[in-house]
Amino acid sequence: WVLQHVEVLIPSPKKDEVLIKLEAASINPIDWKIQEGVARPFLPRKLPHIPGTDVAGEIVQVGSGVQSFKVGDKVVAVLGNGGALAEYAVAKEGSTVPRPPEVSAPEAAALPIAGLAAHQSLTQLAGLKLDGTGPQVNVLVTAASGGVGQYAVQLAKLANAHVTATCGARNMDLVRSLGADEVLDYKTPDGVALRSPSGRKYDVIIHCAHNIPWSTFEANLTSKGKVVNTTPGICTVMSAAAKTIKCSKKQLIPLFTSPKKENLDFLVNLVKARKLKPIIDSKHPLSKAEVAWAKSIDGHATGKILVEP
Image (cartoon, rainbow, N blue to C red):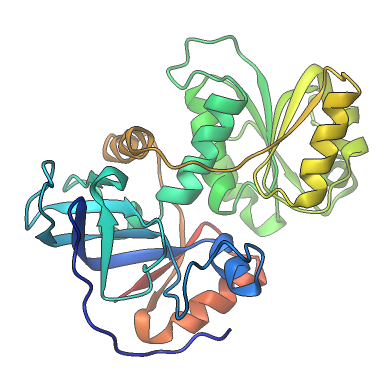
């Protein structure tokens, strides 16, 4: 499968759908992993396939039965079957939320999958309370300057956590500006060992990097610590099952993001209130979407990679 620029008919919204004229879309690693065949035979559901799930734009048509939106509304949406790398896309009403004027289209498009992954990891899987009312916990975020990591750092600080973060040397100041209390260069001995500069053990590790062995995590966890792997492969799932079988109080939990409208709306409103800042690596015109695609595959983006029609 290769990326090709083609012209197709503008899609029509069905009963519970809206048609969006796109202003911005963002690329997630799952997009090109689907192209590589990681989700066969389930995804893509049919070929040819327009990739991408995260979009922001303006509604230009609504399907019958749509109650929440009208033509002209600015929105952000998660597309269930792809379609983001285009000028127009159809989204389900239940996967679409309003975009207030205080939130730009690029900021909104940078939010959905990465922001929801961080939100779900911290709240649903790790049990943190983002209103700051829970007990203070020690959180480690690996690859903290990436798409999911940037949000995990900021949301963990809203939960009153002490945050240690790993990233490349060039992004250490950025990650500190997001609120991280301690920042490790992942290439240094302490970074490789995930060793907190203040000697803390971690209650929660939000793992957004690759190729870190369980033994490294285990040495740094509290007795009931949890590792949430935001990019799980089959090995992670099998390892998590093994940890459960052994009845270890330390847990490895694979994340499978399930986008929820109320959580996306929550994140959009955090951006509106300037309590959450989407970091944007770069913007590319739709005519050069393959450049954005290649940059995502390269794996060294700082924040989110956007495509603009």
